[in-house]
Length: 286
Ligand SMILES: O=C[C@H](O)[C@@H](O)CC(=O)C(=O)O
Ligand SMILES: [Zn+2]
Image 1: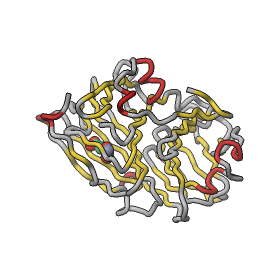
Image 2 (image 1 turned 60 degrees about the vertical axis):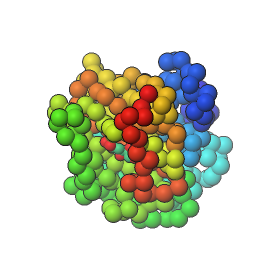
Image 3 (image 1 turned 135 degrees about the vertical axis):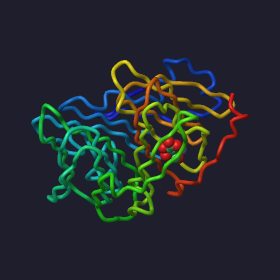
Image 4 (image 1 turned 180 degrees about the vertical axis):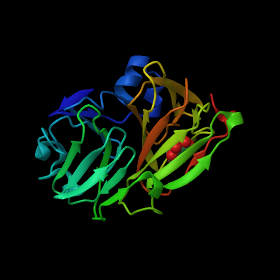
């Protein structure tokens, strides 16, 4: 893992090398920690589809999207969103996001899409004691679509699973073609019901898109065993509250919690077809 001018860089991993990774190596390559430290910004740039996973947690001072970054030497542009789009969901207290002077109120669980070309994006918290936590993804873009604020009631809902399989959950699709337009970024939030612990089972891959999962709503003593790898060669990463994990296109991404939890998923790649998945038969898992 290496850090270039305040952004951690993650290189892609191939599935043949992946088989030999130790627990430490798995965590170094795929796990993203320390997303929300008041007054600090976390940014992890993956060479897989060039997705950037970020955490903004403003204290008494607002935070600017590209703050502290040498934009030219990291992104090769004059400003952060010159050739990029962005999605964010607030998992903390009330805050605001100002996009080129227009202020969007961001309540807990509100999402936003910011299109290519926005010059200034500023994150603020209303109450420093209960700061906003903006989980933010950005991907390369080549066209400008309008900025849209989406509260959770405007997200498209899909109910999946059942209590007897411990996987009853609701998928809230925020950045989805039926809700708003993006170039390539898809994003949403999945909530497990009480007593339900398995996400994304039966599991899948999607050769055409990579995905990042961000787990939250967990207590200090709870964990999610996040499963990854080729379906016949799985590994796990123990994840704690407010940590994210990168999933290459060849990898499953599923998990089992010590309790119920929520997670934000984000995808980039060839298409935005949420249902374009290569389903894995339970019998083929190893
Ligand atoms: O490709 C789609 C993603 O893996 C997730 O949206 C799956 C998910 O939220 C779930 O099944 O609970
Ligand atoms: Zn997926």
